[in-house]
Length: 169
Image (cartoon, rainbow, N blue to C red; front, side, top):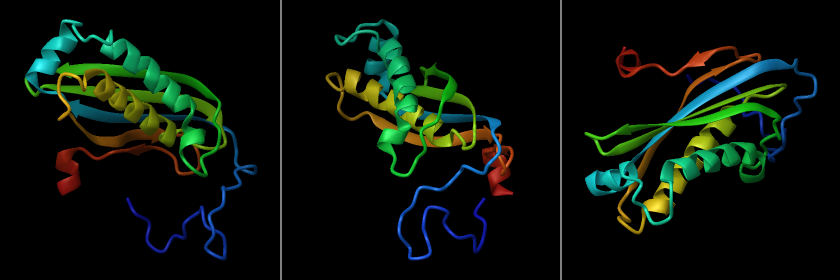
């Protein structure tokens, strides 16, 4: 939900980019869940299921890459704080009829700033890794959408992405 007339927190009075000072914020348990998908097509899906990709175990490597991506978010996204992640999981669902791999990244921490960017980065890096490992079979793989499903903790509280039916209401 967009909040009207709320100034961007990453800009100073002169309109220059700044890192937000979170020093006065209370430490709370924070969690975020992000989801994304990659459409791979039937042939690539069959190769993933059979573990017949020359580069190796696609989902195993993508899981580790997603966790690493979440841990390195502050190095990739300007103005992000380094966050001491207490837990990160990357899980996959193989949607064989649609020939899609669905990725869910869950991140937790105790701190003064949220982990939404870490969850989104983890999911995105896992998807990019699947693309990289499967591109020899098909360069037409499609990544997306990637979105935040849920976040909790901090001043703004709990957020859950509305489902398709709720968004239309």
